[in-house]
Length: 427
Image (cartoon, rainbow, N blue to C red):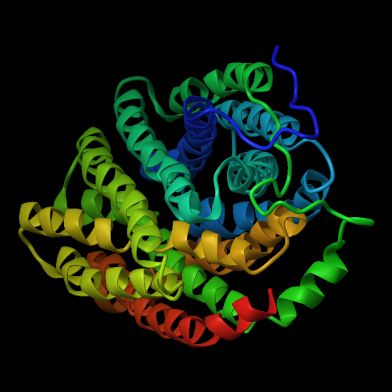
């Protein structure tokens, strides 16, 4: 087992920093495998348990998001004061175990409780990891590093869709939960034994004085940073579309294009998984490249990505030629994935090093309550309401309505860019 670095340590070898980043990215991939496995499995679950689209949206979105964001803030408060590596490794063990238990659920209530347990575990994943990465990497490399980490979302989606679809088609949805959940418990032990806890604020060459700021102090500081809240709302609204439509995309392909669950898993693993990973990394790389002269590029890059993705994204929902639609969606998914890494980097640039995990938790509170919490729930609810008028096309039109929220996301990022220079001056 590795020992933590002494207080005076200020740097790591490039190889070790990359190793740490890969390990934390693997954690995020596991996070999204276990979070998104439900998405590919929801059609057989719906058939077995007799659920509505609104219940599916509650299961994959709101119920998970409420506990995820509520627990995230106190866990981040703990991480800003304790050993972040230990927090992350414990979180991985909890959410992986609860994913495996999801396969034993006999009714909707039990499955809902298991997903709440997954949300509780995953609340301890990203904020401490964000904070660690900001201490492994200097400011001019942070958006790239955080975007590489955020690409774990799409590696997780890729593996979750691919293996979830194949396993469910062959052995049933219960076995799929167990197969993807149990390896994470073992990985948590490996993480605890191999990763080092970095010194806080080493690149800023600062030493924290006095007690660490609490939640009240953090909120008071962030209240004086309007660009943070506009950035949080921009990322939340972008994720509203990503989760609202993404969580129902397998159902859309199965219902409206008569694809099997195995086919959907394989196609979305390649299209959504690969393109999302490329776009997330590219968004951070471009932000670091252009943001050296003007940090507003960290907000302009998401605006450019979402704007260019809008039309091809609508084409996926409107075309009857699903091959063409998925081909255009590949490029749309690259572009609309630009936003996450730059948003985290901007948030960290606005606060002191000792507040980064807590700031990430607040950012993710806004992002996940609006995006993950309301996106799938309202998309499913609108789909149910449209059934009398549109029949089997109801889900298609509900997803079209959800897509219009991208326009609000662009507006929020534009307002954030306008306020950013003044807020950075306060920092």
